[in-house]
Image 1 (spheres, rainbow, N blue to C red):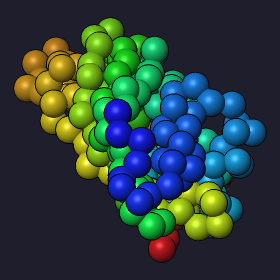
Image 2 (cartoon, rainbow, N blue to C red):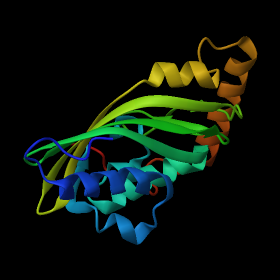
Image 3 (cartoon, helix red, strand yellow):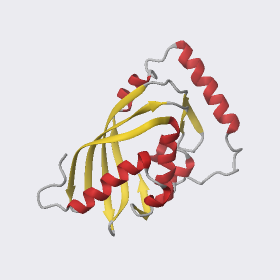
Length: 188
């Protein structure tokens, strides 16, 4: 693992690496020490409405969403690099698909539900972070979602898996709040 770029500081890298591991197993209070109150996750377009708020609460919601679907969630960090207020991390996300994973529309409605397959996965990811005042203020990523989907049996879907997806989506929509109830405004 590369701790820093030549001339870069190890402190921003250490903060970012802690934030990645916190996604898998960090406590709620730890997120306030990692994320700026105005931090934005540029990757939250398919995440639950509670993940679309700025700051530690949004990132904690993302961690909870991932942990709920993927048992044994953890990240392997391969390379890191810092340049000014920007930190990049090359990693692998690993886990077992143990519970339904709900994906949302841009309007925060339930879009797709992937029922648990019990399969393990290893997905290559690159995460990019911008820091401000010693905290993460912005995150975006490049992920091998297709590779993950293949490992978990989501694609190509079998007819039986499509039926399971439809049933899981129906259950999730039935248990979701009614329009306007408990909904967070996700407009930019």
